[in-house]
Image (cartoon, rainbow, N blue to C red; front, side, top):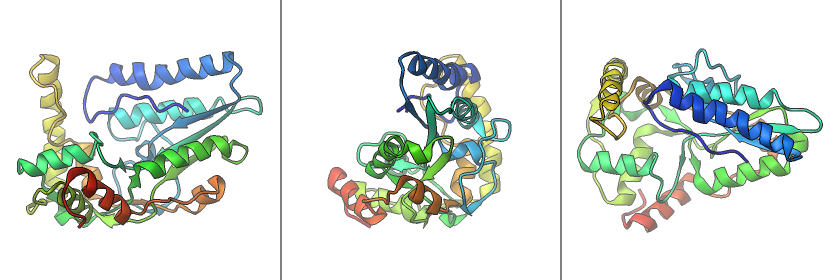
Length: 266
């Protein structure tokens, strides 16, 4: 099961190539040489997200030319590379967990908490966009099922979510309540955020190459698109192929988050 990747909203393209594309090729070759029969590539729905809303769609085809941002482009190329190796003797499947979160998560949860605490977390378009997410233990279980169900899953890409679309504002408020910080109360138009994100991303990258910044930028075009457009998925094929359903609901996950951070479940 291959989960390793460079995950970032910004950075040098070659760094993404080295880790996400060349790294995947290296692991595929090593697995085949070692006689491994089944290989699960953990991908991302962003490989088939091209900036517009997604409402009840299936996985879609990865497209590195149309995917948004270096992370998504490199993961799309790596997914195509992995699935091209699928054969009767070396079965490869791709699992795409969508927006994974849970206690201690530093990619989403703790960034939300940190930015909300400092007043740097706006809602885009009022936080009304519907998005699917995946609680961490559900994501882990689905990846394992991908390996166990390779007879059915090989050669395919499957998006994995909780199957519970929620408005972005509701999810952010739940995370903030769990940590005992105020939820974002100010809104920015999505179009304005996307334009600003493009500018900030270029400035941040330039500053990073000079060693002036280390953290992620406060906004990028990709992040603005993710926060201002709906993206939720039809889970029927995933659940049929994997013979699996999520065990932890969004509401249960928020209670676990609150228990971890000492806040309250919204």
